[in-house]
Every structure is written in C-alpha cells, then in structure tokens.
Length: 126
Image (cartoon, rainbow, N blue to C red):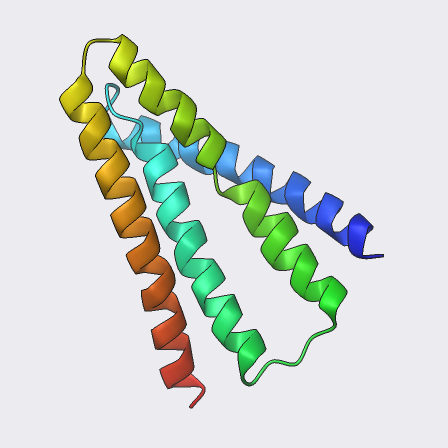
C-alpha cells in the first residue's frame, strides 16, 4: 500500500508542479529566469516543513499516508532535477551570474521555507 500511495502522490504532485510552474511563468512575464521552478520548490519546502511538524505533533497518521504525502506528493511536486537542468542552461546561455544567484536563492530560500513551515506549524499546534 505504501508504494501505491507514493506512486499516486508522485503523479499528482508532478501534475500540480507542471501546471503551477507553467502558470507562474506565464503570469510573471519573466522568461529568462526559471521563476516557476523557484516558486514550486519554495512552496514544496514550506509544505514539507508543515507536514513534518504536524506528524511530529498533533496529527497521527499511518506511515503509508505520511510517505504518500511527503515522499510521493511533495517529492513529485518539488523539482530539484529541473532546477539542476535550468541552472546548467543558464550557464550555457552565458548567464553565470544569474545561474549562481539562482543556486543561492533556491537553496537558501527553500531551506528557510522548510524551517519557517516547521516553526509556524509547531507554534500553531503547541
């Protein structure tokens, strides 16, 4: 059952990632920076922070549900492999400054978002 829930979650997460990334890219009007991937990764990290705090505190869930949500859904939703490809493309396009900024911002903001989601959720459920 765990594998089935991870599989379903990953498919749903990947579909949401694609639609959200495309929508953010279209709405932002920014076409030379992968802003959609950045937003998706930050939201995914924030969400996994919330879920980690919830499962460590007030929400008791079976392991298969936890895996389906965190490994499946959020694993399918976040896009680190896409981030890597887009970073390489920025370097190949002769934009090393943008590539380095993208690396630093993506990692720094994503980790900060995970921490913020965790801390906020713990305070809500404390």
